[in-house]
Image 1 (spheres, rainbow, N blue to C red):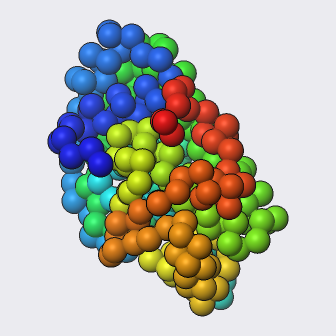
Image 2: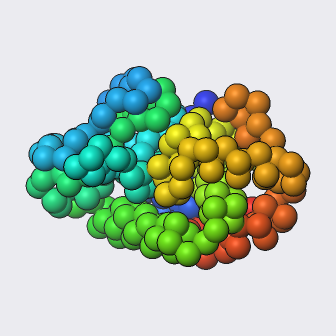
Length: 247
């Protein structure tokens, strides 16, 4: 696994380059973008429904999720976000936030003022397309989640989600061919895949028994990537990566 420390701006460049070709001038502009780093504890709301933020954020370390609650207090996790992701880019154009975004592990976040992003995109118009593609990719992931949670059995559903996380982390150099950080709890995986926590536990046990995964604390290992892909019916097309990160 990659251990070299990279700056927030370098991580943003790495993420955008995984989905969009950048020029040297655009990279330099991104290097100069002001990013304020803050540490966030586990299970802390970052933005809430009804907020009207003047900034958005990028994940530097840890995982966050988008979620909504029913009137009865049941939680549905609608998306998981990993380092390099910009979960609330929509706040640039939507005045009121209609989702909750929370940490599901200790996180380091890079906050970016909306006006700084607007100024950057005015200087480098192609970056508008790069950030737009970032939001479109997350919309594509959301559509795949609807299919995954609506039609696939639980075993396939969780295998697919794990494959997705491997690919997304590889795109920013944070997973190798065998292991990655997986801090989401079984309760969070259950809320993300629409099954009970007990069922999630059984599925993870079955995946381990079949030799598809192993884990020690938050470190998840994939002994056979090809078999996990087959088990999850996983095709990475919907991630729209510019280069093959699964080599």
